[in-house]
Length: 292
Image (tube, rainbow, N blue to C red):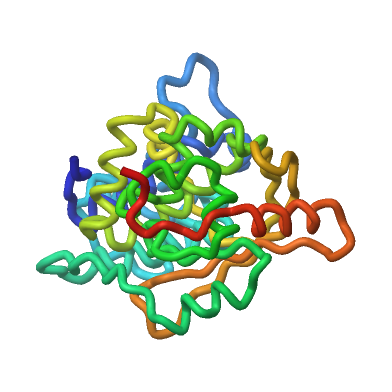
């Protein structure tokens, strides 16, 4: 199932509406009047006043009828909504995209991984490492990189996707003690990407599947949170090596169609490094076809 296609102006309005309903009047410096508020967060007229635009203009923005907000208006809305740097940049990107006509969505990027990048995966062993597409499809791994996500090798190679694993694989909640934080970051990254390329086929297919099959994903998707990629430390409760905490580094791969490499590391002479080494030594060589 593919996610519903929509115009760039609709996406801009959707983001504004989501952030508005999650911004409290108190945090915006307003004193709510008496009585029960029917609208969660800020009302349209309150946000328009804070941003210095007319209510009619803001309403057209939120409904996708106005698609050319000036940079000054975008920045004023970001300040009124108290957006962080990543959210502010996302709003700017949405505004730029809404102002231009995109006749056809771009085709899905190639899944081919260059041979020298596969050699790089081998070179960083025993550190678990993988290469993923922009929509988190797992395109190549070293043995530890595949084994770290316990059970993902149950799926054929074309189905291996880190977002799909987090939300749909039965082992994911046990493998990630911090599952709630993991899924929030995952959805936020997909939201940021889909916001500036909402009709890309690789994204719409994945998002449509997860909206249909995972209530947790659907709830987070509706919130429309966006974050930048950050280096993190992740803890796994692995069925083969037990609890293991690793530092993570993600990086864009130049000259590829949005592919990224992820590498996990641990300090030498630590139990986490020993567990990482054991995982690499006992992991089978990644099977590109998956088990039947």
